[in-house]
Length: 398
Image (tube, rainbow, N blue to C red; front, side, top):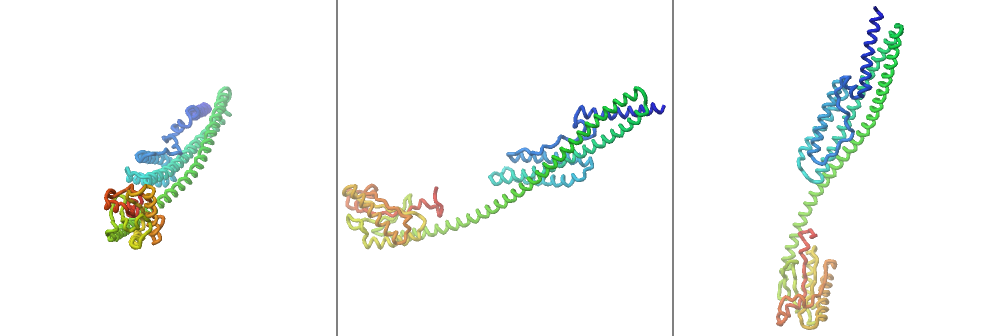
């Protein structure tokens, strides 16, 4: 009677163990986890997807938040106390990044987009590292469960071995066969356990590498924010300096224009057109048919040069003009010589040579009728053109 009870007990244990191992062998590690009571989701990928918009980043941050809750609930149920500090830190970082992302809204600009992407990358890298750590802890929990199952099976095998030694005949042979089969399943389970430990070690290595990358990204983000703050400060200082310079130039130009207007006389005419201020000197300031500067012309040019030395920014075009009496060749040369002589004189009196250009226009640009003596006298002139269209109170036009 006792032998029958022992055999029945041994067979019941063998069937239970054999059924569990066969279920693992047939359905794989995923179903084994379900047999062991695990409700854990599949492992989280170590590479977070890239995002190209604020709405995508917000959706991914919310998904991170959900996965953190799910993974922490599993580990907490399994009694892994070390998961809670990592969970709290990761949840806080996700919440902070979500607040910043929602605050940015639809803001545009290269600096805003760059900061948003960098903040998201730092957060996603950190959360991915935490999820990888959680996966490692999950594997360790499963490994411990599998080790416990293995130990239980070894106990059953030991009991079976003792029962077989006391049983004779065909039943003993059958139990021996079952024992060998169970040993094979146990060997497979041991192999799976070693593979799980190897994967856990690999995940540990990936986790350390990810932590290093997260630290580098955090450092880059802080450096970028510092550079942005410096640029903002420099921009404000530059704008203030530019405003002051524009005001200074405006005052200088007003004063110079007033002094130029004071030169208005029978010999000198001051006017303005689209190019700027034009100082026109009549032919009476030259000897007839010659380009030499008269004493009277030199006196007036010296006064003009003194004004132009203060009026520093614009370039000056010196144009010589004649009436239509005589050949074009003679009038062209005469207009060029007069323009050059005037340019050289004001240069010698302090106006920078690089600001000056002299050209002769002969009788191509009359301002009066060449058919009358009065008109021809007006056309025989030298114009100083202060090219103010190049200025915008201190800024050159493109």
